[in-house]
Length: 248
Ligand SMILES: NC(=O)c1ccc[n+]([C@@H]2O[C@H](COP(=O)([O-])OP(=O)(O)OC[C@H]3O[C@@H](n4cnc5c(N)ncnc54)[C@H](OP(=O)(O)O)[C@@H]3O)[C@@H](O)[C@H]2O)c1
Image 1: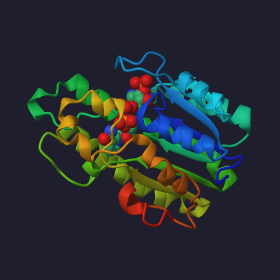
Image 2: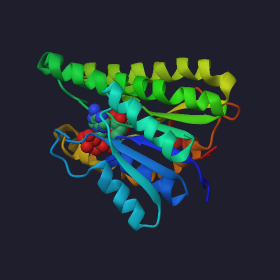
Image 3: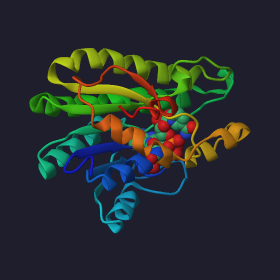
């Protein structure tokens, strides 16, 4: 198994892509820690605990922790819990995200704008801030930021979402530079359009539903990225479909 004994923290694992990556990691032998909010305001099914239970039932090793990525105390507590339990942290996947992909600028109210920016940019900042000291001590680790084509291509209705993902991509690149000397890889995985629960709830996503892939299709690329360290690959934006041609 490719991730035997590795410890991986995945944010936003109650459903969708985060859940799919958690399952893929566990199937490769990783100890998986899945997080999501205690009370999701989305009304969509799934919790981190339920994902962990499903993985355990399949024979994998998983723990679910309620943690809002925008809350510094909750993030620090979750990471402390991981280190207390496993003594290390090899892989961080910053997956938790909010999508407002196609809404006219004037229809996005300030509260929603702020919430999106908090989850999509402050979230990865806080988790990295908590995890990086551990990885520096280990002189090893892989951080995967879930980006998007929206982070590189401007589009109508994308002022909030595209801006947040572009910020995440640039955050990734700058962080990769800083962490090279500790052999910590920092890469963006851009999954392409997904048939996730979150997408399903967005009417616009149904305009190209047939072109979207199941979140599970991203498992192999997320596994391959988890195995990189800075000396093999860092500071890249990897489009899942293109990356699939090599997995290296
Ligand atoms: N879907 C696509 O087509 C697509 C394409 C490109 C990139 N992406 C990116 O891929 C990632 C996952 O997307 P998805 O389609 O799987 O989305 P999803 O089905 O809506 O799931 C989003 C996940 O993020 C969690 N989350 C949201 N806010 C959170 C917070 N404050 N704290 C902790 N967890 C939080 C949700 O958990 P709770 O609500 O249970 O807390 C849920 O587990 C996102 O970063 C998204 O931008 C998606």
